[in-house]
Image (tube, rainbow, N blue to C red; front, top):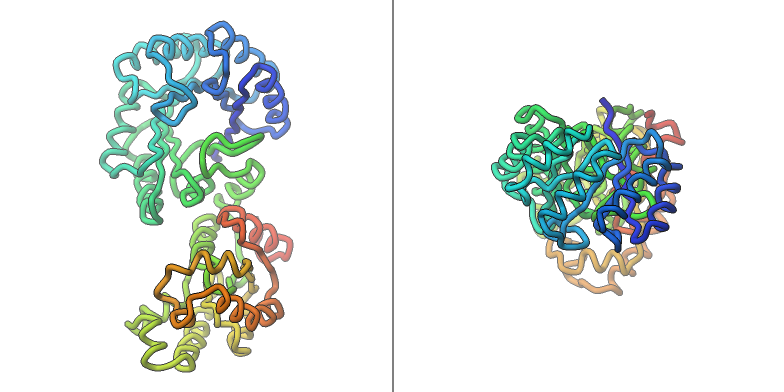
Length: 411
């Protein structure tokens, strides 16, 4: 079953909610989430009235009622009794009710029983805005929600680094085998945003996407989410994709995200050289010189390009050689990632593994090097994408869109 796209509504007044509902309905998502904790007036009768009006506007689109408490990243605190009454009252007018089971274990069973009696299903939810819990804890949380009676179990976490994202995606997929009910999982923030469009790998049955506005950090625009989810379900690649650009443009970051979304194999040329030679790039530069390294680079590109269907992340100087450009163009397309000198400097100023910059880590030196290389980059590129926004999902979306128009990627 394809992943459903859910878009939130977060108005503070009934008028704002109705306006947002009308706009979101036009986007035709699979589900709409009403975040009642944003409402200024949360009296039960007012909340129920708003829910009824939303349902009239979105018609047959499934509605999720959510009152996100302050403890789990919501807009306000609320007492257990008031929380229970709001959720049970809304249950008669929507398809799903979000219940923070872990934070309300004492009343969860009765809440869920009441919600089920009114014909709605329960999305048991748990949120961690400061960390990604250990796998054993994530499993414990999800199984606890399942045992409490949740029809769908949802967990959202915040990654501190790439390893957190990788680990979360792995445990998410494992959860599909551990618990019997469907799951919704997401790693938040820009770093974790890839999990929102890689549901084939995570097993998540729903992804939350931004419509009028985002309800959580890292939410992808609804139109991008739809397209990238479709890509994640399956696409084909003619030849290879080579990412080029000055250091700091995020070639490795983008290639890894693009690989997860498309399923195409990602190869970082520098990592390939390090693994094959058993030496760091800095060590090769220092002891053998740049010409020696460039020869290794050409040899690596020849080997990598023998097979198609790859995303090749190239070093900043790879396309300075005509031979390397010929190799990459013969096997596919070259995509140039661009950024301003200020963006580049901000990203690399604290790095100690950039051989070309180690002797002069300054904005002026970055500008000087970029001015020398930029004409070459521009002349060999088939596609050019700006990465100043520092949004990997947006960049991947733009790349896929361009390649689809060129006929290189087929969705």
